[in-house]
Length: 600
Image (tube, rainbow, N blue to C red; front, side, top):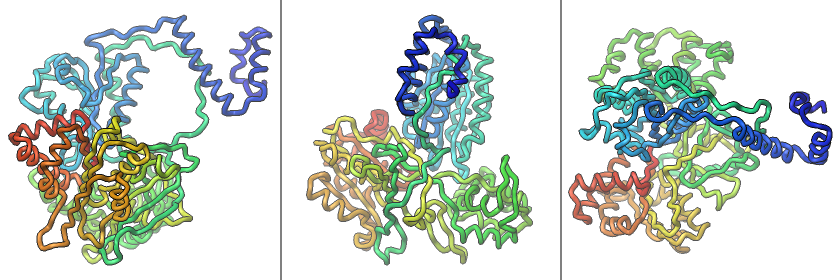
């Protein structure tokens, strides 16, 4: 009985026959079987407890907390789900709803609301929240004098309009007469640093304004024991590299990789449309540039955020070195005393700020605006390193315990110096003897139709074609009867027609029905996928009218907007719609889940 000392109190209540029967049952069982019995027993105990102790029912109506989320990559959903679980554990009645599933008429009835929402690209809402955001910001929004609310915005301060959608909703709800019970939260890419304390504060305020019911009594010392560790963003799996090959011509002028990683033994699974998160290491040469520029010792220990590491380790693994952000610009302006740089942060200089954020890396600022920096000050000023997400380019039904990526490597000359991308350079340098820390990021809004007889239209220029390789593999494996149509574009047919041989084979075996190509540098006039969309507009519109699903993947700031405009033109030209009707038609397709975008 030494192994069960922690449960002696519970066992003491069993008579001899029951205890003997329990010991006979456990004899000869392995760890996995005993874990399963523990989990089953915990669930059974919960059922019995509920049958003996009535579960208190939450008060209805005004005392319910509604948590709405709009999420493009899954982070807002994760935070909203966590907040919902904590609120329920605290005894609150909670309703958790994704924005596109929320009946807009319910807004006028709400009395307590939390909104968790991300901002995409150039101040765009996530696709699943477009309809609700337009409703709240528009003329049809109701007056809300009886509503108390709180907004948590997620964003990236390397974009000029940081957390713009969260800010707009926070202001607009107040304009409609609602009252904040917690201030606006604005979380950068280091999400939990802001989201965790904000959630604690908001939850405490919600408990004060709502009141609580008594929490359900729980059975102590009976917890399900997982048989294996689940790998997550915080606890990634280190995947071995199976293949890492360049898939563009030598004279293409850039490096694009097809990378295959092993997930064997990880327990990780994914669906076509999901992304894989990669935790990068900064290039060693870039770390050396920083140490040389600032005349700092890489072995100097630096204590920050509760841990002590050598400065080189902070710069190689723990800090963002390749993306600028507003707080970082402010820190450099303050240290250097440069008023012109500080002036870029004014609202009227947003265009200049956007250009700086897009064109330069942090080390460019340090070179241009020199100042004395200690190791401690440098670590405190730089943002924490964050994972990069890549659309998965494989179907697990086709490749088994592998995951494939399509990676454009960032490596260029600017201002007389070489520049790198953190994750892409890390992946490009990964060989067979290296391991890559990864996790799966689900994307439930970018899924193949459940009805495999539905047609699909895929628009993916450049590396945006990655998820559509997975889509075609999956549809081949399940023998889907629906047709598959791909629009692909890049610079040159001979240099960077990604996965050319695979697409040609798919056309021959029938797993790809149509392929339309646009290569922008093969002729005197540049041709992009949006032009092919307009050219094939009659057939494209007919497919959509017959129930096809439409998917777009790639650049959010230019390509996705141009494709959206082309789709509006198609509806006007071939559907007889007005531009406003066409926009509403596309919005309706988004709401239905028949128009899905994975843009970045």
